[in-house]
Structures are given as structure tokens and as C-alpha cells.
Length: 314
Image (cartoon, rainbow, N blue to C red; front, side, top):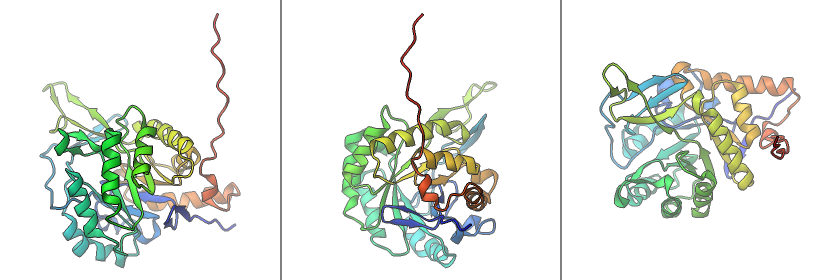
């Protein structure tokens, strides 16, 4: 049986729904000996800023019971080095590239996106909105719907490429944030980014992360991510979604697709198994063959929910 693994996220066409999550796959080139970059749906590269960034001082990563905490600090080579040095090599390997970008201000975000422009080597631009707005007292862009809308609107006119907005889970209502991003001009939503967490060394009574808190990722956040993907899909049924959070197996991929994602991004699992994304592509095709699914896109949003019973009182 032939299986069509291709998926459309608005104007963004992927050969399959398995992409990598920004910050966990470097610039892609570091993993080229473990996985065929051209066989993946897409590679969302390490977050890019206007100038090179050194990130936070160590320690920057620690393991948790069901994942990890990180406070890398968005270390990267800067947009110029990426476009001139990294991107040509990714193109040579046939990779579909999503440029993840960030900034400290709206102006910085826009400047990075303007530098990318309509570069045909880039399939889409992804905004990491989990960054503090230094002009507004450090409030994280993605945690304030008004600031999020303004940010997306500010960069929308800087490129005709598909615009992906990566939502923060550290909000009261993810649907409100999703609507703000879409109203601002987002073509695609990716969710979720990491949850803010803390881990403590009880002997020293110090945080295990030098920055004190860090972003929690891995299996621990998967149920939260699934719930948020489902909520956003119900509220915005026509908006394409990348599901992110604790994906390690084909069953996890399927959970996100059924919940409403059109594709997924795999993050923390790459640290443990650098070939995991290639394996997931193969496993997804085999699962579809066994279950008589001819188009993987048909799985998206097929969750069968049960009616919620009324509370029973004694």
C-alpha cells in the first residue's frame, strides 16, 4: 500500500509531518551523519538573532525525572553567519529550512526577518515569542496578547514567506494567545514552547541551572502540549498547527495529529537518539500501512471525544 506522507500547513508544503524543534537540532548540519536531512519534513534551526549571541553562563542544562531543564540563553551565530555559512550547506543536503528568529524588541525581530526577506532557500520563518520585551519592562512577548499581536503585525510585512508563531504555554489561556497571533498575521502556529521550571540541588541549596529557572521539555510536558493543541484546533479549525512537546515514538506523533496538529516538531528526544526523526518518518509510514491509512493528513483533528457527564452528587 502506498502512503502519502505529505502535509500542507497553509502555503507550507512538507514531504512528511516530522520536523525538528528549534534549539534541539543545532543548525541541522551537526546531525547530518545520523539522519538524512532531506528526508525530514523540515528543520527548524537554532533561534537566530540580529547579532551573534553567547547565551547564558553554565550550568545551562540539567536532567529531570521526565525530561530536562535548559537555560541556554539562545546562543547563536547571528543571522548573517547563518545565511552566508550555514544555509548553503543545508540547501546542498536537500533540507527544508524553517528559520526560527528572536529579538529583544519589535525592531530587532523585524530587522532579522527583513534580512531573510523572501529568500527562496528558506521555507518559512518561525517567531520565538518567549522572549522578554526589554522596552516593556521585560514582559515576555508571548505572554501578553496585545504585545504578541503587535509583534506579529510588525514583522508580517517584512516577508512573504509563511510566518509561523511558536506559542508560549506559560499563559492562562493559550487560545487567546493563538487568536492574537493569527489576527496579527500568523499563517501557522507551533505549540508548545517550554514550560518554566526549577530544579534544586538539596546539598548546596542552589538551583541546578545557573540562570535559576529554565525551560522544561521532554515527556513531562506532552499531556499539557496535547491539551493545548486540541484547544487551539477547536477554537481555530482552519489554522495549521505544528504540535511540539515530549515526542519520542510514532504513537506520540499520532496523538498530536489526532488532537489537531498537521505536523509535529521533535525536540528533546534528539539529544538521546540523534536518529529519532528519521526513525519516526519510517515508523509513521509503517503504521499507516498497517492501519489502511493512505493519507497521513487525514488523521489530523480526528479525536473522538465523549460527552462530559453531569456531576453526580450523593
